[in-house]
Length: 326
Image (tube, rainbow, N blue to C red; front, top):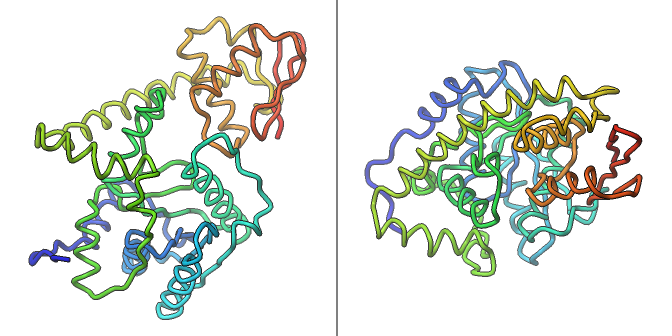
């Protein structure tokens, strides 16, 4: 593989991004999702380099999904890397987790649910403040198209944020080739996941076919699509502020119950955003899709039954109120 001769100082740029977005609380404990791949390996090195500034501690967390026999090699690489850097590593196998994923999504979605459960469990166990993930600018673009193809609402199209609750993404401005250039220049080893080139996954087809085709049509396409994502994020933030205010007015019993009559007085778009806020408030573990929101609205409006199960949670109706429980 050809390596660029002028490798930018990516670590310094990560430091600037972390400072601008205020991603790390000084003297906090950060759990880093470590797959062993190039992105997470670079992120680990970057977060270690930032320790003199933020005085934060690091714990690496590695989940073996057990989907391929070679995954054990990734686990060993992570352990060897963490041992060499004196970073604690917590490893787990997917079959060991006390969690059943919402299995209506793709294999990629199921993997994301498992990782989220595992990372959050590590964060709670060790009383950490952040979970650092290695999503980068190319991931942002691919995620936008995945959600566009699936008919996502505006929150989905707004794609990945630098900060989402406990999750931080210090590499979101970097491109993949910049990460690889840095690792190769500094002779840092990483694992290569063979499934990243498998055409069975929608993300891989978008990366290999769609984005290069759009770029061939117009070189400005990737840059301008990222600008459009930024506009969507601004709009989504504004709508979220409206939804938060509306949710506070109609929620009861600490947010587990909402007033359905008051909900239906809102604009239809705001109704859906309030439902999403309700699900997030009650820590629904999988990301609610448009179809999930619409299913809840149909249950509120038309279904005569008093209880409805959606994936891992239940919603109960009583008179003009609805209560959610896991």
